Length: 287
View 1 (cartoon, rainbow, N blue to C red):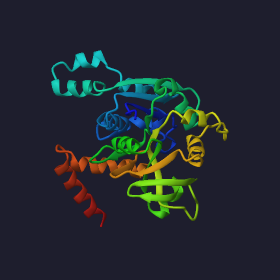
View 2: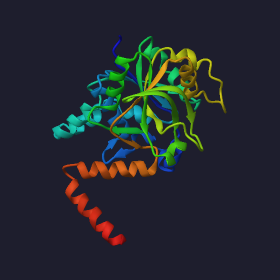
View 3: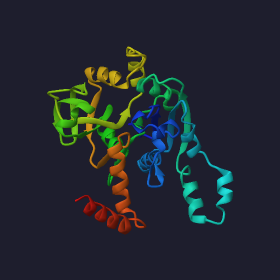
């Protein structure tokens, strides 16, 4: 079985929930303290054995490419600050990162098609650019290990409260074996009676077959949905889900982003004591 060394990160979303900031700054590089969300995702992939990452940019997201491109001018300015200089160099040293541009917002399926030349006939991880995981074993590595046991497209899922199932694609399970979930189908954002609480949460192992399925997806409002291709593959029994363990932050959501910043600050050696005291005082003032 072919091991997974490639990953694709689609970054075409408009980031409307973070306007007006995202008018100028892509949501994927909004910081958690001092590090962009996308940098954490890249580190997750690299820690999972990925050494080639392809980022599909939306129009107006040049800042993402700038972040992952070495800056000789800035490195020269920091020559007397070795720790900071090393942090900059670490951004790009452990993986080859390439880019393509999705000129028009034509959906996640179209974004994946932009990576076809990059992935070729290889299976690959797809990671959404606004889902941040904190796990003892990186989320992408969990999926790579799951793929090695059952050679098919893998959906990363987690169980969410039933009150939140209307925000996700929800798996209709036919068999559950530990963390492996075999699927009858999926229901996109069910308004009532969800088939389960297993929600797709922005991590996948995609097999090269997905490209053929995407070509048969009908456009809806000018967009080609990756989920529609996955639904078709489920019907052909070429998909299963794996329940990821770890903490997930929805970084496309204001509350999720704030929660991540608080949690990371409380674990940061330089900030945790001072920030914990501030939180305590702020809570007392609200009483």
